[in-house]
Length: 161
Image (tube, rainbow, N blue to C red):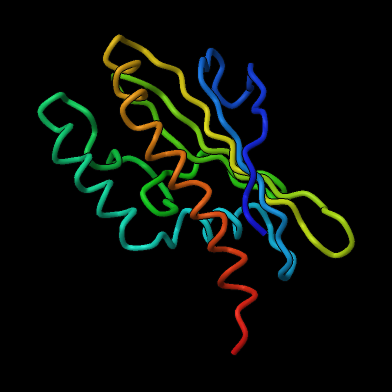
């Protein structure tokens, strides 16, 4: 099963004022997961090219004042993202920066038969012209990364020994 892009809804209580959103869903055929476990499996175990892209982003954007690292006061992380809220059916990650604020909402719900649907919604509130330009530059990468991370969940769970 490949992830599919579905319509994301705005406004969202997780990021009031968000002006950009997208959502991908995957029919998951493995064991039952909580939203926190789904977040860890998708965002916490990316293929090597994803952290390499993030490292490149950090080097290129540091002169513009973008956060290259998670704020020190942040609590638990999944991958590079601070956990805002964790729950059985929904886990929210993200933080605010000078140019934009973002949230990643990972949800699980029952699917057909014994499956689950894992959904990842990305919400963005652009705060400046630079936020608009930055999002335009990273959107093509985002649209490659999120479906890849979701597809890996089924690939890892359902490979034969």
